[in-house]
Amino acid sequence: NTNLSSDLICSGTALNVGSNGVTLDCQGHKITGTGTGYGISLAGKQNIIVKNCIIQNFSTGIYLVSSNSNTLINNTVKSNNYGINIYYSNGNTLTNNNASSNGYYGIELSSSNSNTLTSNIVNSNSNFGIYVTSSSSNTLTSNTVNSNNFGIFIQSFSDNNILTSNTANSNNNYGISLYSSSSNTLTSNTARVSTFGIYLDSYSNNNILTSNTAYSNFYGIALNSFSNNNALTSNTASS
Image (cartoon, rainbow, N blue to C red; front, side, top):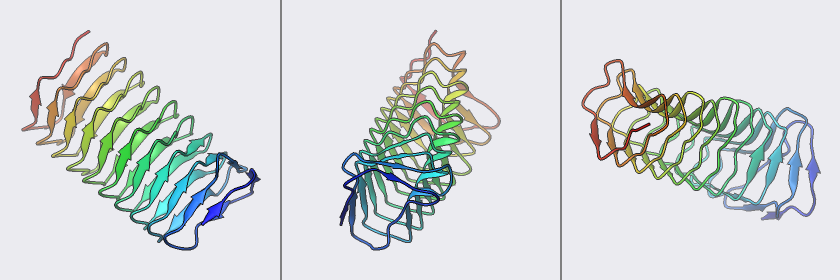
């Protein structure tokens, strides 16, 4: 296990986690880059805990590739080109992280399944808040995803994801969007003050939307482009 005892300033990648089953506790210290590399990198690793880190000014703040069953908790990932990238990685848990004010996205799940994102703050990223692509059976609960260009964006055959009690407000385009993604379940989410509150597009079929609130948007809940067999129950979409 490693406890960080002081701030770090690094060129390129700062920390590569080299062993399975260890804990990296930054104890609130900053890891600051020069705009390149990864703040913390896990490649092919399992059962790692990364917590209490402040990571800023890297190409990617935290990067997981082919890494399963890891935990990221209470980290702040800001002012990077990309915040947290989960790539070909399954069964990871992200809790109470702040991935805000990054360049392209706050949190990305790419070709990654069965991950759990809970109570993360993902605000004011230049493009996407939470970006889910080609990733299925993930669970997003009680995340705050505000003031991004796109809030929660789920695309490219990302199926069977569960979104519950997330807040996606004041995003420029979509609060929550499903694009070519089916059999997802959206329950008790709030999406307001965006162009589209909740938007289903391009063959997004068999999704279930229940008790969601989409108000003060230009469009509350919209279905477009051959999105069929979706079930909408007890949602509120008002001005």
